[in-house]
Length: 314
Length: 287
Image (cartoon, rainbow over all chains, first blue to last red; front, side):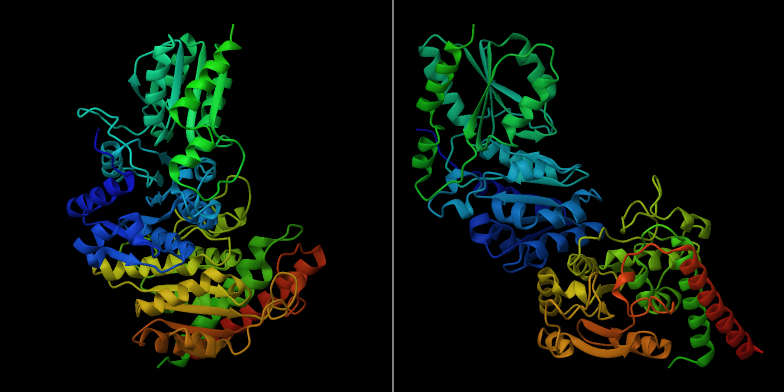
């Protein structure tokens, strides 16, 4: 059994690593530093750590001011509060002037689990994707999370980093190279091409292994950079695949599925698209795995959905 | 201690600022007259006396910063920046036109001298806190001034920011409340209570002083007092919305309004007369 790691832990460690490398990095949290794992940074660099209390909007606007003065602030909270409560200040004060504020949304998606719908961010990508200048990163495992976090130190504009609290295995190889705007093919396969993001990359890989036993050749592409989107990779897949699939732990409205659909709509060659995700519903309390199962996001359900859809494709 | 000659000169500048405001806004198009005019004296005191600022280098890292949290009043700031020469006074005429650097609400990075993007009310003080915290962290000695409206105090985020500044003991931060008692539709106190604002701010951990926001001597003395405090200080400036134009004063209808030909002519005449009087007074004093 491979070692399973929650991406938030990899982020917390990487953030502290970044703090040692770059004095301009400051970290703000809204009373969740144990959950968001910014406690690691806090313990090492207390002078550059700001617990802003339970006031997310104040936190991101303060970070905007810090960025305007030359610092590189990382704001932290649960993904739903960070993007939902703070949409206006993020829009006006961070995205519009393109300030280098980093928004790390933790415990994103259904796998937030027992706290229920109020805490499960299923719309955060949609919110952030609507904002000009915003980069959106949704890493698949601990290694990619570390690389994405480090990459954020250099990015000129604002960014949203989507993190989870669901233990996942390493899906990226040891020589993995992360690049903003680049999707990475993790499994070869031409008949079906699956674009997955975050925790769903692992689930997609498992589903692809099952599909192979069914005689279906499914390639898996890790879309950790949702914005900018690797449109070339999508066009390439569209030119050969019988079916394109997107899988995300997010609403099928406004997230990865929508982004891929928008891209495909501009392609001359346009295969059918199957969007897997949360189908315009709210979440609820439950265990992470139970919730993924209920919403058809475990490998057996993914396999079944792909096979069902393939039957309708000529 | 501020000497009379300096006060008269600041009053002359404030009168010129008001006149330029109404000149740039013109007639026939809706503009935020009321709050721009109520804040004009404080803007003049900040830019022409208080702030450490080099108009030739508006990006100087050690400059004092002014954040207009009540972003709709930015024309007053544009007028001050143009009078300082940060950009030309001719550019003021492009206000809110397509392609202009002078947007309807402040845009940092686009307009020289503008320090923040505001316009959605309630967000500016948090941003100012961030600037002030960054100064502390990086060892810079600049000060941050932030103007909020009294109606804007309805926004909850401002109170979060008041708590943050007090907790961090930001002695490099001064807030000016433009207490003109009117919001867009009617009284600032009609929808929410702003009773005993001074006590509320004091219990939030701020040093508080009330001033007449149109009395230049009180404004200057207030700013001197505020910058000498050991933590964040707020000046509650009692003002009149639309100050300087008789038919706009204390009238909610001129929060954002288009002037008729006749109204514009009258406003210009009144402000030109006020400016001429101040010029004469300043001139007499230097004789």
